[in-house]
Amino acid sequence: MIIVDPLQSGGTPPDYVVETLKSYLKGYPICLHCPGDVHRIRKPNIAKLIEEDLPNFIGADVVRLTHGAREAAFLSLFSLYKHHIREKKDKAPVVILDGNTHYSMILATERSLLKPILTKVSGPLEYKVMKEDFENKIESVKEKYKKEPLALIVTYPDGKYGNFPDLEKISKIAKENDVYLIVNAAYSVGRLPFDMKEFDADIVVCSAHKSMACVGPLGVLGMRGDVSKIILKKSAYMDKELELLGCTSRGLSTLCLLYVFPYLKKRVREWDKKVEIANYFLKEAEEKLGFQLQGERPHQHDLLNFKTETLYKISQKTDRYYLYRELKKRGIIGIKPGITKVVKLSTYLLEKKEVDFLINSFADLIEKYSTR
Image 1: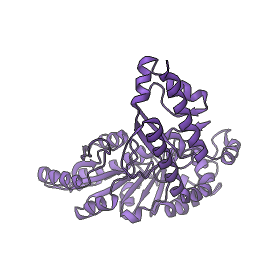
Image 2: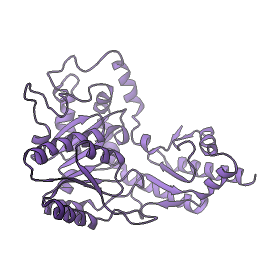
Image 3: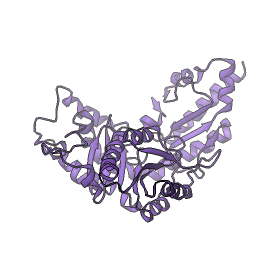
Image 4: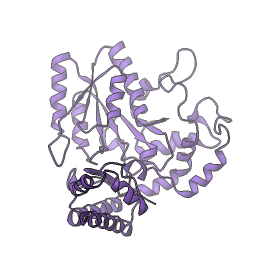
C-alpha cells in the first residue's frame, strides 16, 4: 500500500517496532514496575525517554506524555488560566491563535474558559499567516481588558496547507508583550529537526501518532522555564501532578514511542530529502495533472493541498467516490472518500519511483473518465 494520508504518513512505526509491541498486548503492561508516575518507570526505561531523550530532542526543560497534542494544549491552558486569571488576575482571559489553527486548539482554549481570537491570513492561494496581526490583536486586547492576553498559539506548520509562520518574529512579539508562546508542532516534531529554544517558546505540544512514527493516541508536552511549575502543580492531597490526573498515557502507545525513538532521531535528519520529494510531486502534479497548490511557495513541507477542478468535474459526470475507489484499486490509500474538489495528501513515506506511480495513477484515471 502507498499511504498518502497526512494523518498517517508521519505516524507509521517501522515493522520491527510493531513486532516488539506484540509481546505487550496481554494485560496492562507497564504499570507493574511503576513507582508512582509513568515518567519514573525504569523497567522498561520510560524514565530515560521522558526525562532525558525527549527533552534533548525538542529542546525542552521538562517533558510529559499526554493523550495527544490537544490534551497537552488543554491542560497547559487550563492550568495557566487558574494561575493567571482566577488567582493572580494579571492577564486577560484571551488566547490569540494563528488564522490557520487546528480546530482542536480553539476547543482547548474554550474548554479552558478562555476566549479564542484568530489572526488574519492572506487570501488565495497562499493563505499565509499575517505575523503583524498578532501585534494588532494584542493591542486590541490590551485596549479592551487593560491587560495582556494570556497566550499566543502558533501552528507550525498548519495541518491544512503545510504553511510555516514566521515563528521567530511572532516569538519576539510574544516576549515584548509578556505573553506565553505555545507552539502546536503536531506536524513538525518527529518529521523535521525542532528545537523550541530556537524560538524561545514556553510550551510545545506534539502529536506522536501524527508525526513521531507512533501508534496512538499519544502526545508530547514540552515546557521551558518556570511554566512547568504552574502546569505540573501537585495535588493538595497526594504527590500527584494535578492536570495530568496523576498519570496520562500508560499503555502501548508509550511503549511504541520508547522503542521507536532511536529510529526517530535518525529519521529527522532526512527532512531535506522529504521536502525535495514533496516539491517534485508538486511540480509534476501542476504540470501533468493541472492541480493547483494551495499554500506557500516555495513549499517547505510534505503536506500538500491542491485545488483539483479536473477531478471534481469528473465526479459530476460519474459519482463522487470514483477517485477513492480507483486509487484503492491501485494500492493507494489516504484520500478521503467522496472528496474530489480539493485533495490534501502527504508524500512523507514516498520515494521518487512511488511519486511517479502516484502521478501516473492520477493521469490514467483522468484519461479513463475524461473519454466517457
